Image (cartoon, rainbow, N blue to C red; front, side):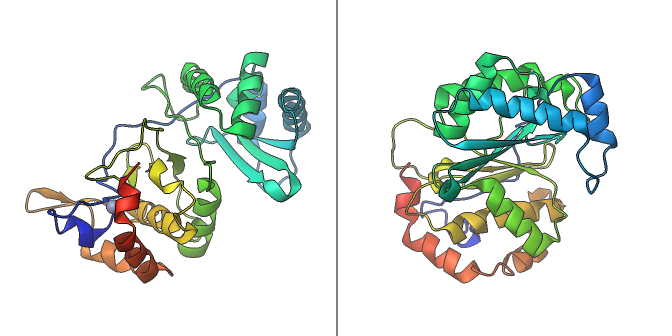
Length: 279
Ligand SMILES: [Zn+2]
């Protein structure tokens, strides 16, 4: 959030968060054996053969639909992030982390994965979203409940996973456990009165970043600042003060200033508010 702007309601504000959201993340399926192996596994231990085989097999099936580029698949038992793509453009390589629900995916799904990975294809996103919804009862710690939130971390310009990982290591000792995703795409660009640049759902441990920030003119430090802010929400409980929820306590704001590019981010936001709000 940007407190200065929000404090002057007459001015259009680009408020990154309100702290509330009804989104849910979820996903998952497959042979119980593989899941068992995955859950027993210590992270430092070498990958068991069952998992390696499942990863190799999925890699081959995705590659069959890829025109070019290499893909490397890691299966996860993650509770929050179902798909995470890292593009290593120099090497024309994609590092893809997929929930194990994808291990047995049929050709329709592997083709959608390939198109999502290589082209960020919108139709492919929808197919994958439906698949995740249909398999959400296989996600650890989640029963058959609300539909899945599709997690897409790779944007046109920025990979949120990369930014999140860097910030988590640098500021939080890797202790933040949340999913992060770009928000939904919107229609034609228009001038808005406000944009919620980011949000954090406590219930779902899900950070959502507005697509408006995934544009070439937005500097990486600014995206990182918004991500940092949302991650801070996991550290600071939302308190009730004078009968109202207080999302940004004094302590929260003090911590926020610890961000290395804090001043730069605030001043960039002031200067580019119009462009940010036109999306
Ligand atoms: Zn906030």
